[in-house]
Length: 335
Image 1: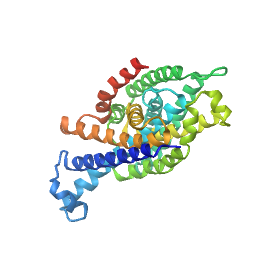
Image 2: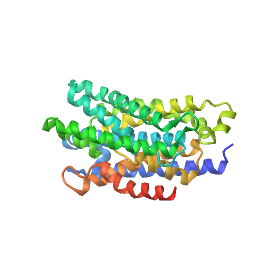
Image 3: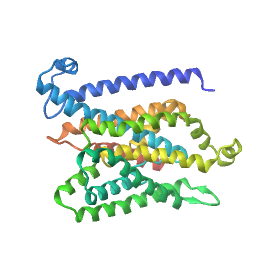
Image 4: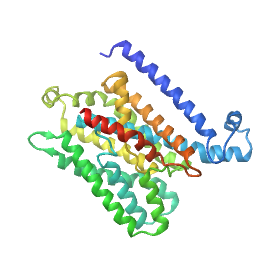
């Protein structure tokens, strides 16, 4: 049974995070190459703005903001699941190579399978999922031992190795591609939020609508997987089956996010850690907080990055890496 004080603390933190997200969204709506006056935001939102104000807000700013929020949430939830099923605090879809697998699949599809723009938006998350799934499967196979089960440290090391190998494959693909297509892949690698239209929102939203409730429903299974394997087996949990199901969920969430944001790492590492530090390791408590932290962190990184260098700014992936890399080193030394 969860203590009532912890539940009250969780609700308070969720409320604070929602306020932070609303404040960051408001600030982000007013900033950019074409600035909007903050006293005109509400009239424009309710349809009383000029043509320019409505175009900038509804066609440029809001789609990017919503996509960034959703992608950050997906990456945070994916990292939470991966850390739970591997019992490894360093697991993150960007660090262990899952995002790289999705990136290579997207690059191959983009370069060699031409498709019309309308279908591309909805097909690309599926392509990313297939690439990420193949990569995750290979990493799992190499990190698994029939006598001792899944080796958490080996999983991270194997994932890093796969990530480096896939980066090499990406370089080979870029070297043989046309200049216009290289620009797209380079933006993806840097973690540039490239999917900035409403169709991209509809492409990623169904994945979260389905998989967030599903993960919360299986939160107690994640709690059991965090225990020693004999204990988990003793309470009647099929470890391999549960890990496989939850791994598929983590891969789908990560793939849906990176298909519209590019290669962004460390969100899935930092958000669960911060959430656990606030309310403890029970998945029912920290996962909702991690989801909101992930969305807020990526939105904040993108908002700051867009203001540093004009007109395109610094990609969100680089901004997150500037924060996440020292944090990863700290965790590595600590563990």
